[in-house]
Image (cartoon, rainbow, N blue to C red; front, side, top):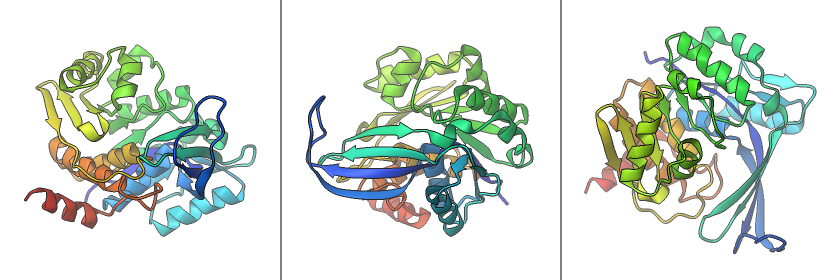
Length: 308
């Protein structure tokens, strides 16, 4: 029996607007459609892990409002353990406003709300489930000091940690030793390392920067151009399957969730990246985030089509 995936992170209500083109500074554009859905990087990753067949738990904070109740209902529907979710009486549920153009590119603004009230005490209250996890995932949509505290606590328990460093900001240099796997995209890798990332060679250079500071595995994603795995044995490139992208929102979260599900099921890091790459590629072929995250069966069928 494989150990569960536990995700510590954020939940937001996503308000999405579909536009022909994204607005420039001072410009007003007319949206062609509007929709609401569940989001937040941590929550999205938990959904992806669950859809990939992993027993999944989510630890976070939501407001005592109808958006928070909708979140709990979603976790129940998707069989995600939300017993360690905290309902915050002092803050509203987090909110994201997402604009997507006709080419699938997006702009996102986030109001953290209750996510920023996740505390060190919340981490301590969940140590029993954290220590029983196959891997614990973090992002940077909660307070930085709480994320750092969680990484150190989980690492101290001897449990694998993954950090998806988004939105990216400078991290304390001594924090990297507590991260088993870091998964930035090319923009986040540059923000953290100062190394411009655009291809395999520069991704390897950035990956080595992380390894030099204590990270065991670095995965630099390059969007539709692929991803690069960097370990002590060097770098390895992985293609992204070619698809017709209509909405890239949440693709990185889908990748992280699928990656964690595979790692928790004792698959190799190469196998895990293969699964994650195909899951993320499938996700961009549909609008929205939660509904666009594929199931394990869909990803496995997609992988088979790519082998011929």
